[in-house]
Length: 347
Image (cartoon, rainbow, N blue to C red; front, side, top):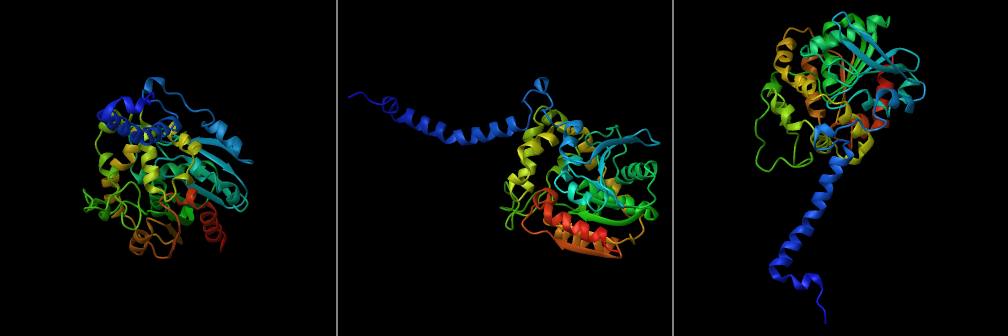
C-alpha cells in the first residue's frame, strides 16, 4: 500500500510539518493586517487605496461637503461640514481623521451645523515642522471659526482632539458655548508620571479588566526620527495593532475605515503631537479654570475623566460609555451621538 506523503517524511519531518501548520493562522493574520491596511511592506510600492481620499469619502455623506481655510499663520485647515443650526466642531484623535465621526455626522447634522475638522498634522490639513503644542493647535481652530463667521461654537473632541478642544476652551472662553471631551482631557503632571513598564502580567494584546491601559507608544513617539524609520512602509501594521489593542471589539472599526486612517496618516506629525506633551503640561499650569459646561464621555478613560475634570472645570458631568474601548465614537456611535445631542441641544 502506498504511504501518504506525511507518512513518508519520517518523525522529524512530521514535527516540522506540524509546526508549519500551526504557524499558518498566524501568517494569515499577518497577511490580513498588511493587505487590508492598503500598504505593501515596501514604501516604494505604496498607493492610496481606492475610495479613501476626502473627495471620495464625502460622497458617502449626503448633504456634506469639503472645505478649508488658511489661517494667518499660513496653516491650511481642512474640514467637512453639513447640517443647520448652532455650529458644532468635531475634533478627531490619533491616528484618525475627520472620518472618525462619519457614523454620527448625519444624525448630528439633523440638530447642528456640523464641522468635522482635520487638526494640524492630520489628513487634509497642513503638516508643518512645528506648532504641535495644543495651545497653538487651538489657535488654528479659533482662526477657522473666525474665518467662517462664527461668534461662538460648541466643540466635541476625542483623544488628541479633546486636548485641543480643552486648550481652546481655556484660551478662548468667549468663543465657546459648551465642550465635550471624549476619553481624555489634556496632558498634565499625571501624564509625566506614567510608568515606563507595566506591572507583571498586566499587559496583553487587548485592554480588559485584568489588563489595564498601558500607553507605551507615548514614550516611543518621543524619539525623534526613529519611529519614521521603523514604521515607514509598515504603517498599517502599527496602526492596526493599536486599533485592535484599544477597541473592545476590533470589528467596530472596519477594514475600509482602517484603510482611510492608514492612507492619510503622517508619522512625523503624529509623533509631534506626543512630543509636545511636556510643553502642554507647562501650558496647563497657566490656564484658568474652564467655566463653560463640560461633558466627559469615557470608557477606558472614564476614571481619569472623573479624577481630572474636577481639577480643571467648574461645571462638568462625566458619563461612562459601556461596552466600548477607547474609540467610543466608532464603537458605540448611537450612544455617543445621543449624549452629544442631549448635551449640546439643552439650554
